[in-house]
Amino acid sequence: MTGRRRPGRFRFVRLLLRARNAPPIATGLVAVAVATWAAAHWLATKEGSAGAIERLPVAALAPLLGAAVASAGFPAADEELERTAAVRWRRIRLLQVLLAGVALAGALALTGLWEPRQYGAFELVRNAAGTLGAIALATALIGARLAWLPVAGYLLAVLPAQPEDPATAWWSWPVQPWASSLARWPAAVLLALGAAGYAWRGARSS
Amino acid sequence: MSRASWRALRTELLRGTAPVAALATLVLGAVLMYSETNSWAARWMPFAAAVRFSTGVLAPIAIGLGVWQGGRERRRRINEQLASTARPAWQPLLVSFAAVTLGCWLGLVVVVVAAGALVAPVATYTGGGWWWLLAITPVTLAAATAVGIALGRAIPTWVAAPAAMIVGYGVQVIAHDNSPTGGLEWLVPSVLIYNAFGQTLPGQIHLGQALWFGGLAATMLVLVAARRRVTATVPAAVALAGATVLVASPGYGWEPDPVASELVCAEEDPRVCLLRYEGFLLDDVTPAAQQVLARFEGVPGGPSRAIGTGYDWALLGDEPYLLIDTGRVTITGDLYPGEWLVVSWWPTLPCEPFDAYGEYLWLADLAGSWGNQQEPDPGWGTPELVAGYATLTALPMAEQQAWIGDFIAASRSCDRAALAELVERVA
Image 1 (tube, rainbow over the protein chains, first blue to last red):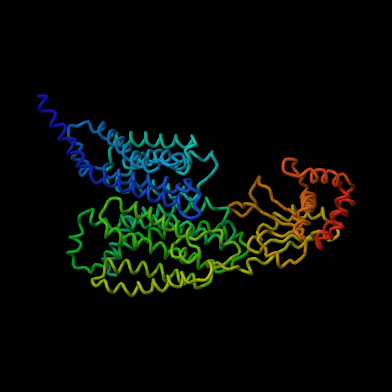
Image 2: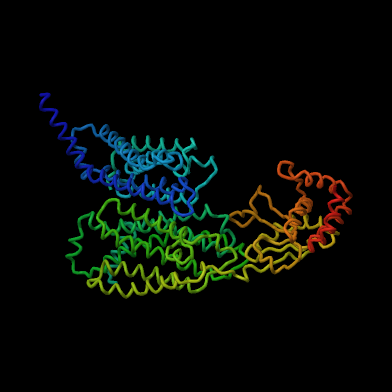
């Protein structure tokens, strides 16, 4: 019995990964990481640049793009059909969000190791967690189709404002430096809510 | 368009991407305009520039939604079915484009009308051709949607929409940050607000942008829908002509608006004047400015007018004046509550050689501190300045005013002997 179950479980994982677009998502995350490194390097070294701190837009927008790529695995090809399977989907979905978060944060963190606390690895990881959580939450609430749109709109609205008042960090967390401890909480809360919401409900059919 | 096309458009507007576009544009436009209230409140040209500034975000959103719309038939796997129907390819494309564009326009119109209704009753200057700046806004959104739809048709991937949106945003930032001559920044939808104060744009910029964005939209649509893509060369030529006008524009485009920068003054003496485009603040600043001016009554040669920042000081010649910095204004055009209205005096010391300037600069600081009633902080002020201020303010008011009058006379000609005597009087 044991000998038969193992290949079955492995086959399930392999099929699930394929069904959730894991190979193209992995390739996409590598491409996003390369683009992130190139954009950050250009901003930090261009003529007249103030250095690492100029990477702020990259630290805010690269996690969005990466999370949009990773969220391609959130909806099933046929949500209703999938739910008929006698599988513990909630655990699998939770694991999926967490794995996507680790992959995204890891890929982006590698690109920001230089001056990591000045819109480098630390901010990239924080924003990756918050952005992926927000997209996962939007996937559960409005469906995967346009889950990136409210998150993108929010980021694009916050980015030009760039408020410096530390008291605004709870709503302007994507553009705050790592030193702002208040900015870490919204990202953590969004990740928790997104993971819980997606794990509980899955992608809303749209 | 046929009746069937109108019906399709109506369905798209009600049930397609259009409501999402309208909602996104409305919410983001309102947030962006509200966050920049201080820049545009009660002033038409900055208001129009603020609307264009918001397209820095709204146009990328329109691109993203356009990409989404452009790839919809493929995602729904109905592109072959649509292609097999006996309708020209441009009809469904035009319906898709019109639906997203009208959605964006609807959201924008609500924001513009609401914000404009706040500006209209307060603004004191309506000229400068600000409406042309505003009129190009829908054209920029139409171009963004068309570019998005073309990209959506060409790139069959999930992330094309957010990626195109981010690239659209980045291109605008780069165009504004890295355009030494100013020409390239006119090729993107957004406009920087701070250039709009007391300035105007020449007609060639508006014309160039209308041609560029209109031509770009038409080129993208023709490329997607036309049976013979070579026909896209016609709108492409129009876009190129517009781009050439914009890139070849001398300087950075904005020009001083002499009428907007004229002084408008309160009727009662002493005179308090602001630039015409911020004349709506005159009633608010006049009492405070007149209170400071009253301190100079009886000072020979002292300032007799208070004038708002931004005026061309060369037009005043040697006339001494007080400077009014109004600070931020609220959305209804009032002075920001709890914020200082700064009315200050900064006497000049046109001395050459430079050593004389360095030797007596503290006297100018002393006179300024007296005029502004601002005791020098021992932390930054030199000991002679701090001691001189204490000595001067200990004198009777008439003698204080006489000292200030003598300083104004001596500083005009940089009379070193007179300046040395003034030092003695506060030593």
